[in-house]
Image (cartoon, rainbow, N blue to C red; front, side, top):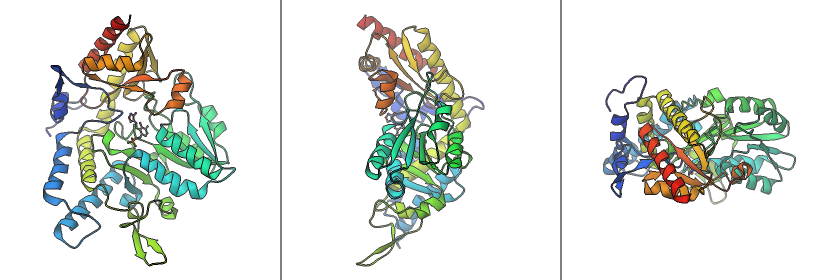
Length: 415
Ligand code: 7TS
């Protein structure tokens, strides 16, 4: 990639790395504003993965032959690269590759939660949790007799921190909080929440699926015990997610998936486990995806995570202002500022979110409509669904103008 502009992003250069953005439907170029669901993949990531399949493909776990050694090295190195990217000083031992954020949540819930929780224990979530965390902890609580509590949100879609202090008590075993809400765009004070949890001897699990893609994240600054995210939301491939965990905790935890690759010694009677992180990575892992994730990190770091964040915040602010100026659009989440990320959830008064998304699709504007896997939060907002525009490094103000045109069209059609 060429040298980028300092301060702002060289958007044309970046867009040229994403061939999919040139796609047209009905002679209109696609306007992709569904990045919170999944981001697009730049050429360097696609190339890294296709080169892997062309020239290196082999199974890992340190086979004797050259190809397996090369594949193993690439796979292991990707763990180091992720550790460095999120500030995990324990290196690869603190980075487990999973399928996605959801699996990372399940790993901790089953491996730690099922063994550690019992009646009298409390799991504290927020009202803005994604189902990945909410449903998972709910089920573990049902199975163990633990109780789930929710930190409320205020009218602006921020966490009520006084309520957080009430909810987190000495009975709290774990706090599981979303770093950035995929529905409200709220950026939560996860370091503060973690500090409160730790004061009460509880662990903290942070869902960073919507944070790691668009802002610098340092898991040790947050002091999170666990932190999870997905490759496909950060210019990387599907099929790979990350669970960061503090080494000592991971060492103490039992695996919850068993099989080859995660063992040290197996007899007919019993088995012992491999070292971290392999203890939690049974079977053939996502090797090409790990190579792709490393390439995605290289790509984002070359742009600079501060600039990724600044670009998204600028677009979110522009979208927020434009939507507000419409007069009949209800916008969810905080006003633009440091605690709002690069996505905007909204509803047009007279039009159902699904109809709105369908009209937008007629304009080749891709947004998401639905409950965004936050049904209880939508219940609280008093709506069944919302529309959501979410931005990434390649989006422009002109694309937001097209979103607004589509809204104007929808209003006329349904008037
Ligand atoms: N946590 C948050 C905050 C998310 O936004 C998502 C996905 C997940 C967890 C689960 O990630 P996965 O990679 O395991 O699927 N969110 C969305 C969304 O907002 N629209 O589609 C997926």
